[in-house]
Image (cartoon, rainbow, N blue to C red):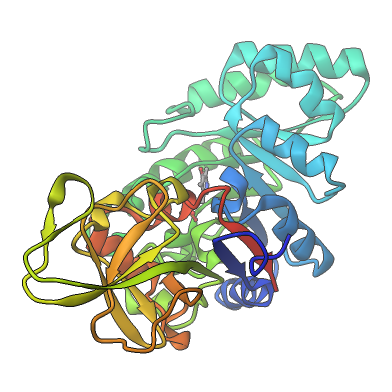
Amino acid sequence: MNFTDVSLSKATIQTNKLLNNIQTFKSLLAKSTKFMAVIKANAYSHGAIPLAREMEKAHAADFFGVAQLSEALELRDAGIQTPILVFNSMRPNEIELAIKQNVALTVFSKEVAQEIVRMAENLKHKARVHLKIDSGMARLGVTTFEEALDVYQSLNSEYVWIEGIYTHFADAPDGQPGNFTQEQFARFKKILDAFSDQQISFDLRHCCNTAATINFPEYQLDMVRVGLGLYGLDPTLSAKGRDVLEPIETVQAIVTHVKDFPAGQSVGYDRTFFSKKPMRIATVAIGYADGVAKSLSNVGWFTYKGHSLPIIGEICMDQLMLDCSEVEDLAIGDTVTYFGDPKDDHLLLTEVAKSANASQYDLLCRIGNRVERVYQ
Ligand SMILES: *Cc1c(COP(=O)(O)O)cnc(C)c1O
């Protein structure tokens, strides 16, 4: 289907920029460091399968990271062969599928470890696992070496390949002295060293997400796990990443109505906006159901040919209204932009998130299914 035919909104995704961003990260890393592209949540809504295909074709990623087994299976179903790690722990009924589809499992409990051994030995098919250490995120993982060793020993089988060990940082955008990432890395390192003391080593020790890869490249170990940065956005909110990464996505929608509007009238639901003077208003076919943050009502902007058009009134589910008084040539059928690459005179999502008082991750993932994805 074509945007110009039917869809009223589209997300243009430039895969060459995705590949450039990966190159940019690789240039910060040692040659031997492996690169995991994190494409959970449908690649932060960009479309996991098309992006995985592009990356696989270009040999750009050594691993893909996803949150849930269902996401890994969709990729395998689409013919993706690259190694995939699932960050969540597996429930017993998922383990067989994961092993059969050659999906690497995250493990941090003895019970799951034993189930993996049982299943792998039954299937006579090697399970590929990564141990998860909780060094301070307090989400998933074991916190002590003793627990980690216990899980490790429970995995003892010729049908289990304990390929990796990893942890996840809670606050890596903070690069200030005394930051928590240093503390977390020290805890992780202590556990790695204790394994070394037992003559136990791992091929892939990993801890860096995008922010840590930018702020703490010295913690890269054997692999980094980059998500947001793939898409050209910098979680550290510093100039460091912003200057070198290229935002890959532009979200746009079509103007469906333009009108001259008198002073003293309200616009939209709940009547939160009143015109102070006569103005021109454009109605646009995109709303919060498509992912435009409702908190941008009366505070955010769209852009059109370098002009900023303030969002007026409450954002509706499927539509929103813009003040286009300053842009005389804006007409029905024109395309206005929610966010994109500032080099093309669009707003950077990082700035939109600031206006919305929301996180970039959240806004990015919210882009809905009705927004047609166009890959270039
Ligand atoms: C989501 C996630 C990442 C990627 O994080 P970004 O900040 O997007 O780079 C890495 N590792 C784990 C375990 C994750 O859940």
